Image 1 (cartoon, rainbow, N blue to C red):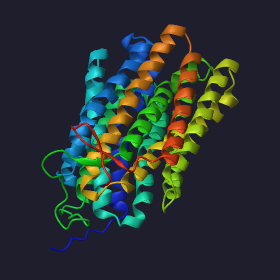
Image 2: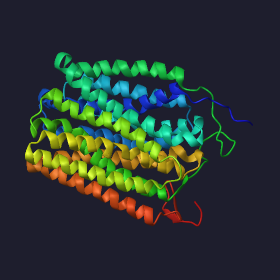
Image 3: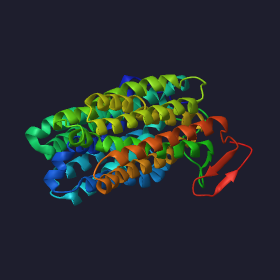
Image 4: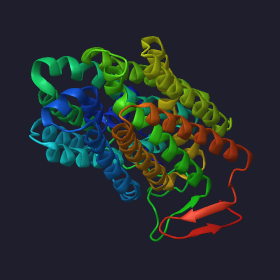
Length: 413
């Protein structure tokens, strides 16, 4: 059988970027209006962090199963799950009368995010030439930070007029519109795997993955901790510790998102070719640690200059990590295991996403300030750099494992 050729153009790239961004839009929007949400529902900052933890724990628990299914489902089906789940989560938030409604919305948002990486990676592998994939990964991953930018700008401004529930309702409508548009732009045919000549999908039984995927998974977990601990609490920190207004504090998230869009595209291009991804991950880990140290200094000195420097480094370094992790991981696996491997790395990422805000909220409540939290985030990013250094010097190319089976050693990948 011959492969069914589907041209990969701007329309598909737009869909992939939106699919990456629509899932986390709820949490970015709630973070940008966190002070309003906290006052409206009469909850503590620590309880607010629990919302993000629930969201990303839901994503983590869902990612492994949905990742494996993504190797078998059609692209349009997966896109419906992503946009439909995101719309449902924002509808629940718009109706929220107490924190339990938001918890339910967070669970749905997490499930929608869980399939976004496996589904979009699957579509890239199916419809994009090998030499262009890293660049496409960079652009489509930037959709997450595009969502952060949108939430940081739109949510606080609209919330001043319509309330945070009102902007959540408008975002629900936006997700439904994007679902309709995406349905028309996603290629409808079944793409065959260029590696096997058969329909892409896992064989029955355990799925064998290269052991280096485990290294990327641990790196994703650690970096996810730092990224979401920063993302969720950055606007609140900017308001309470540096003295910015609600709208200006929301712009810190928007600025980080805008820089993150550009940085993900740039770092995605940097990984094109045969360079070692772990070299880039060392740089990104050290840069992200410097950014969190600047945020720590900004709180201690009540300095707006240090705050914005930390925000820019967070966007340029921390928010770019996932591009290098995903692009590096895609180099190590055959195309018929993209969903399973993406799901495994996404599991680590989302568990980190869940742990970061939960830890930051707990430290905020325990120490009545952000100092301890920023110290922990800095140390975690430094651990990322150390792990990348170990991966660069001693890549576990001779180790492989099976999903659902104990770690095994083999001479082959």
